[in-house]
Length: 217
Image (cartoon, rainbow, N blue to C red; front, side):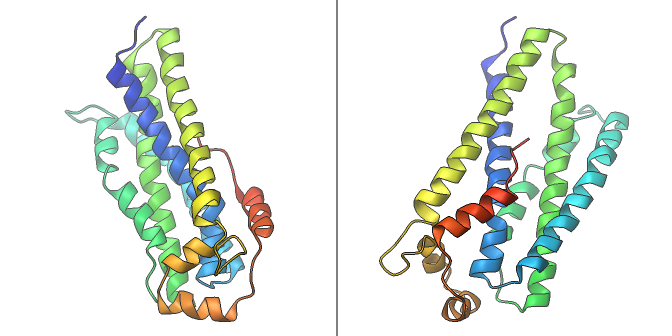
């Protein structure tokens, strides 16, 4: 069975977004908030843990809600349309941090990560449930699922390559592998952290990122 090109591109686009967001959060969020913004790594990890717990609860809840949805757009599309704007906004705000104290920054991180995971759930769960409703053909389903997963891995890996080749690349001023992001962040908080924090080597960043990463889904 021939699958329409626009349908394959839709599944590939969904996978690409998931890959970029998943790898961006898994590889870089802890490093950014702890090493660059100076928030205690235990506090950052605690916020990420709470977000994962919320994600574990919200996944089946959104799935059940989507299954029981009665709307003129169908069961899945209201969730997909509702998540279009909040996902990029939450992902942007996750990195565009205000100059707040530790307690306020923790709350900001917690709210943005929970919001990001909730909005991703609003897209991912109904989107995956939509696949068997589009076609009953086994080959067509496999092709669409393959487009989504392969795109997630490709763009997720590309995100990682760009991170180490650009954002964490060596510079004359910061030859420890974290120069670009520290240069680009000109907030007073980041400047004070740069003056008071010890240098972190690229190998240390790599080990931290490797232990906190997980494949995109």
